[in-house]
Structures are given as C-alpha cells and as structure tokens.
Image (cartoon, chains in turn orange, green):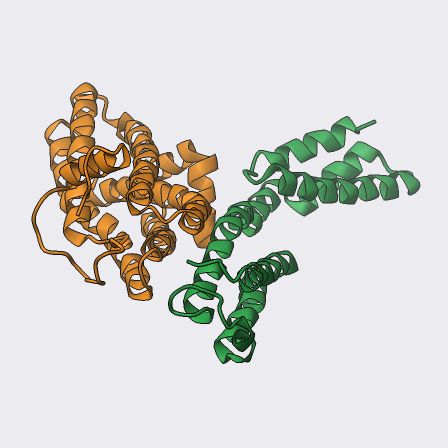
Length: 229
Length: 161
C-alpha cells in the first residue's frame, strides 16, 4: 500500500512531492516505490498488448515493456544530469533519476488506466494495424503527460539554483525530444510488442527499418493506400 | 449547527490530510463524534466546553494524529482506482490464457469446469484481492467479473479471442 501512496502523492500533491525530491527527503524509498509500481503497471499493459498474438507474446511483452522504459531511463539520464550541471544546476544524479522515474510512473499509471480500453478493442476488433496505431496514440498521450510532469518537477526542483534557469529549461525541452527519440528507437529494437498475426512468435525481430516509417505505413494501410506485409 | 471550536480543531487535522474526499470526510466525521462526546461529557460535569476540547485536543495530539491518519489511509484511493483498472484486465488475461482453448474459443466449454486451472483462477480472483487488500468489496468485484467473463465466453460459442 505504501508503494501506491507514492502515486497518490504524485497525482494529488505533486508540489510537495517535488519539494521533497529537491530537499532529498526519502529518495531511496520514493524511487523504490515508483520503480515497483511502474514495473507492475507496465508489465500488465505489456501483457494486454501481446495478448493479440499468443501467450508467449503476452509474457514477452510483459517483460519487454518495463525494460523499454528502464533502458531509456538509463540511456538518457546522464545527458540530462551533465547538461543541467553545465548550466548551473546543483541537483544530484539521484535527484535527476527520481524526477525521470516520476515521469515514468505517471506514464505507467496512465497506461494502466488505458488498459481496459485497450482490452475492449482487443476483444472487439481484429484489425492489427488499427490496434497498433491505437497503442501508439495511447503511448503518445501517456508519455506526453509523463514528460509534462517531468517539466513541472524540474522547475520546482531547480528553483533553488535560479542562475541559468532559462538555459536549463531549454536543455530540458531538447532532452525531452532526445528522450522520445531514444525511447522510440529502443521500442523498435525490442519489438514486437503486439506481434503481427501473420508472423510466428519471435522474442526480437531482425533489425532494419525504423519506428516512424512503420507507423506511416500502418496509417497508409488503414487509409487504404498501401498494404503492409 | 456546527460547533466553531470543533470545526477549528478538525481544520487543524485536515491540514495534514491529502486523501480522497470520501475517506477524508469519513475520518473527520469519526473524529468529530469523539470531540462532541468529549465536549458533552465535560459540560455534563460542569466543566468549560472550550477548555475540555482543548484538553482533548492536547491529549489527542491533533497534528500527530493528522499525520498518522494520512500515513495509514494514504494510497487506498489509488488502490481503488488501480484495482478498478487492473483487476478486470488481469482476470480477462488469466481466463484467456489459462482457461479457454489455445485458439481463444469457448468450444467445448463444459470441459472447462473440470479443469483445475479454471478453479485455480476462480479462487485466485476471489482470494488474492481479499488477502492482499483485506477488502471484501475488491474480492466481490473481482469474483463477479470472473463469472461474468466466463458466462460471456461460455454462452457465446462464437466469441473468439
């Protein structure tokens, strides 16, 4: 229950939560709770995504979705830390990671809230491209809300070091773009999460292509312009 | 007519709470009844009501009580929402992959009832929420959802996932 109370604090009393991160109060406990909640919620959503294909795909996606977010966190957090330090921030790496984990937790909670909707469409439609684009839209909304939280949190946490605040804000904006770009590439590398119905189960597909051309092709198929093989 | 002294004490406790409106209201109502009893008892003994309330508040430790209540009840509102979103999904996935046929149909559903996996999932749907969260409400919702999904799949043999 304590793990869930962190989520309640983030959602209801975020300013207080960010102030505690700024002061370094209970960081290990907070990070542990956020990590546990995020992994559980992302695993459940991953299982829903993979359930269109097979049991193995469901299990594999349940593992891969938390890995996707954690890998992106590991890859991107040093960049944010060093650029913040460069522009006068006095935050520690742990505080930076706690803030990014807050964004991931918010994303994970929102994905959980979308899970029944995703399940509903899973039961009522068999169109693979539609289900894939639906999930891309859900991830865009949940991820967008997550980085919005990160932006708010960064503003509160870095309030103690006013010097270079404007530059740090710009760094954060650029970092969010990098985070989204890295995240989509990690997702592409770890694919499949849903699993094309015409293909057998594979833990990972061969490298090649990219996330964006695949999404454009899916939109093209839904609109009737092309057929994706 | 609310007593302004009691309202003031309740406001001090409320300042430490950041819970669901419903839970917060229930807690404050319970504390209000304790404070009213204390005030009534003091008045019956001929003591000053305000002094009695102040004594009760000091004995109670309002700030500490508020923080303690926040610690005990924090997370239940989120737990309700998480259960509402996650449990039906989890039950549906368990039914799909543990109970029904590999191709996702309910054909030959009568055989489902003699499968141990079916009863394991049924029991888990009832007991896991009950033991984990100690709330019958969760267990009954989960149990109800489990049987609803089972009946939907069993009656609609054309249903396929």
